[in-house]
Length: 113
Image 1 (cartoon, rainbow, N blue to C red):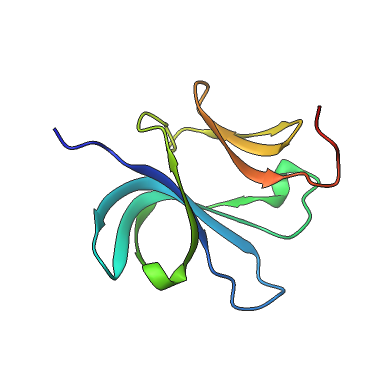
Image 2: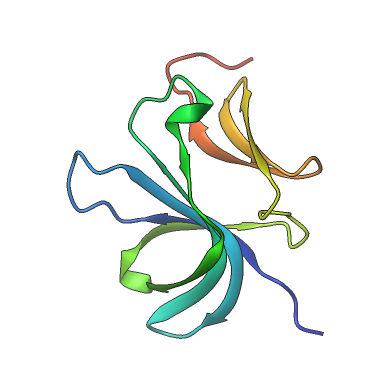
């Protein structure tokens, strides 16, 4: 049986004032030039004070060229990205499904214990 790959992808920003752009979802297909991902997008600016400052897109299929991907993190293959919710925690803002979580925005201005 083929293993499900759930990834968090950060897209390249072409200009300084661009918002951060993440997609979190299941890799449907990959080759040497692109990924096909079923997942949700998240957009946010440089400094976040409230969860409402993160824009959450609809779940859908997106084709992403490798050259537009700045960073990829593999998440647990049982991560429920479809129903996961944003939560404020000590280290910043995370996306959590109750069992698993991934960091969306690190609050670098505040020390963590």
